[in-house]
Length: 135
Image (tube, rainbow, N blue to C red; front, top):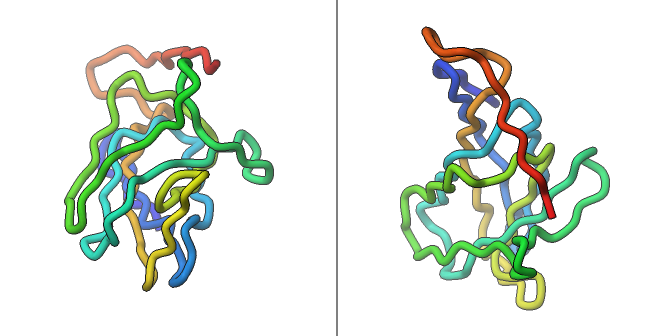
């Protein structure tokens, strides 16, 4: 369920099911992910991603240097803030661990995702959509 707050939309989800390491997909086609709220009971593991333009075919997310995009998070961490240079993508899945070393979570883990909505301009500011090239 998405909750709008000005130009920021907060989506409850996705979730990683108990015993799994990869979440269900979440639709972020309306903008750019700017914040991920981690589950309070996260089992110690890095956070990595799979992305898709159509919500059907997903690929592991790598940066332009060929490294898997990885966030080192700790159990009980509150919020991971993504940099302004993060790219836009249509759909995303969250992974516990890396693609080579996934880490199953013992119970369901639900995230919250804050998305900067490109569809509505900020009051008093011109509306523009930054174009970012994805390697």
